[in-house]
Image 1 (cartoon, rainbow, N blue to C red):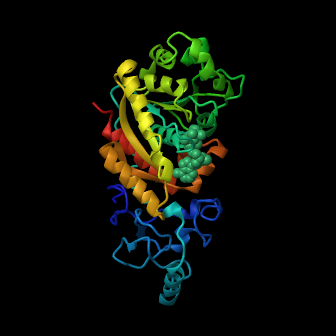
Image 2: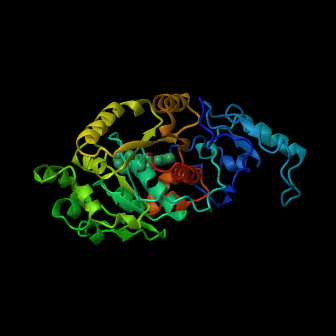
Image 3: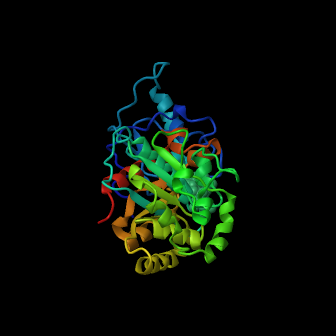
Length: 376
Ligand SMILES: Nc1ncnc2c1ncn2[C@@H]1O[C@H](COP(=O)(O)OP(=O)(O)OP(=O)(O)O)[C@@H](O)[C@H]1O
Ligand SMILES: [Mg+2]
């Protein structure tokens, strides 16, 4: 299987300096692999890992030199001796490699402005399966796009309010939220607030009140189109992107998001059950298209939480690519401790640790979306 052109190239710049990562990186959390220290520490610079491999040892993950095998320049103590290098190589032979560094992305586009769409792209991020990375994807794509010059609004449509939390936006029960917009016809303009960490990024927050909306919407006029109406009467043209983060269900909230969007982005976790339920999601999309929103397109699929050490992840990725073709972004999001830590600091990983593999991957995915543009 191929992980696409975004991964595994041997011509990219050498491993970014990992010294800025916090001490727990690569040594904490269930998804860091072995406890043998940071992979960035263990790997000599100028080497790259192939992302589409199946084993966790340094040897078997396709550990290849990117600089023609040239030794790195001497360090402060005069650099490693040949003997030390041998020792390192020997130590690496059986070392498990952190998933943090196992998927490579191109960092070189990070500081450039990306193309901005002519009109606002309203992108619904949905998958009724829970915990597949919808919120993480919404927040980090939004942050990446905003950091590259786009004006972005994240609409939190999940009673859990996770996107609001991750963006550092207040969403206590007494804060005006998307609930009042959907149920009480409050204008969106009255609830949209700037995200404190990133200029050009705004959020329409959600809180637990929204849990009642699934029931309360049932008796409302135009119950499936209430978000659409709110967006239509809001000045969305001030934004380049509106990203709508959905709850893990196919209820009325998600249907509102599908009716409100022009595009659907489906995050798919590279796990065994990942494809279950996708058929039902696609059927729901078809129903929405034929009755409520003919303009809806499944524009993007993003593979998330990719674990380069497992054959299963590679198999799931291959199945998804075979089935959905080039709707699937070339960039794959690796499992990254940094990505999961960031929300507890009220931040996207893009500001929490911009050099981490998760941040670089989300930046690359956002770049792909910006450069592909909206489907015709
Ligand atoms: N690339 C990643 N690496 C490591 N952890 C991740 C990654 N992406 C997401 N996670 C973690 O996985 C969990 C689920 O992610 P997230 O909340 O984004 O999924 P979700 O689809 O929005 O969930 P829900 O269906 O409950 O809304 C979170 O704890 C998140 O921090
Ligand atoms: Mg979520």
